[in-house]
Length: 228
Image (cartoon, rainbow, N blue to C red; front, side):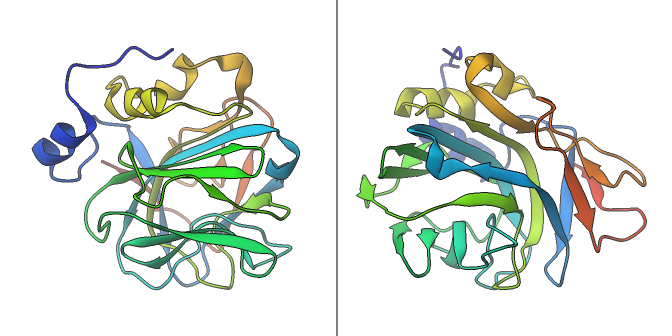
């Protein structure tokens, strides 16, 4: 279990105005035109339970696919349908649109949890008002963004577990404040962890678990790793 701070997710969000509650080092910046990262298939549908967590900041909204599949650009994990709706699943074959507070400005943390075919989505550690939803279909995650809607913004601290995080776990992730929070929760269950701390001309998004290093595609020669 991650140790929590004494500040609730709601209060933390009000205090920081949507900014990260602490410094993560660098983040990876996408241009919204064709920047993407590809990596080996992560078969989320094969996990009985799973959780996916990441920090993001949108620069310009354009119905972005935040995470998905290069082989099947209808997979959204999630897709920002609007600045208050995140779609999870496959456009055909099973998806749901989760309603969340506006995320058009500032940094936010998104968490998707899975128990069988039951999914929950949290924004800044607060569960969507849509509650738990049943989503069927196969999800192989292997790309940040697809041609269905490239992401324009920044990503940081991305992690995947083969276990379902509880609401308390998600709140503790949001409030942890140590810049290396993913490794503090059951490392044996942590399947991938991209700290996004590359620099200079680095062309690899390194997975700290050593399983799913990502290849940067169409990024500039340098300048994509941004301190914040």
